[in-house]
Length: 251
Image (cartoon, rainbow, N blue to C red; front, side):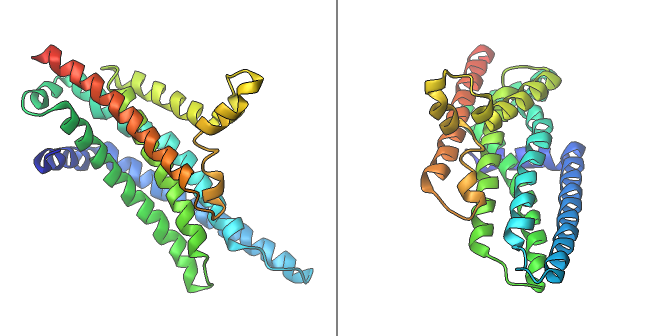
């Protein structure tokens, strides 16, 4: 992957109004959710104070649900962004300008890295919002770190899968629909369970959410992180093959 191509893809994202709209909506919704969770926490703490009970845990009452809802939020918003990665370029014929001077692997990686950087900015904003609690109380940064890793892992899977879906069609709306349905499938696979009863363990092992349970509860389990890495690589490789096929047709 060349740095020049990465700069081009980054510039495309920056100058795309949809990028700023989605980032603004994401930050606004995360902030509102954080405010609502803090209000609920204060009410619960006040009730426990009157009953002389133990103070509720900030990690359980605020941080964990905030990170869980953030994953759902990204599952809703990211398809709108990944759909433009290839579908819009196929539709506007701008893809063929890239195809004449760059390899398929470079194109796929540049788009993925630029999207991941944009995604990381939103995760960093989430982390700053959580860090504001540190002014009033001591936070469990181990739990916060593992929860952020869960968001980054699932977000990485979302981006790689979304890129592949975008490479299948020149219709952005179709790519958005397929990507969103795919996100729901991979998130809820453990509950949907299309396998026979004896194959339930397979649905659990393939579900993105099932690998986030330990991380959201403060336990860093390496196999969960490796699953997210392999999941992302798998869809990026498929996307590479798809784009390579497109380049052959161009040539």
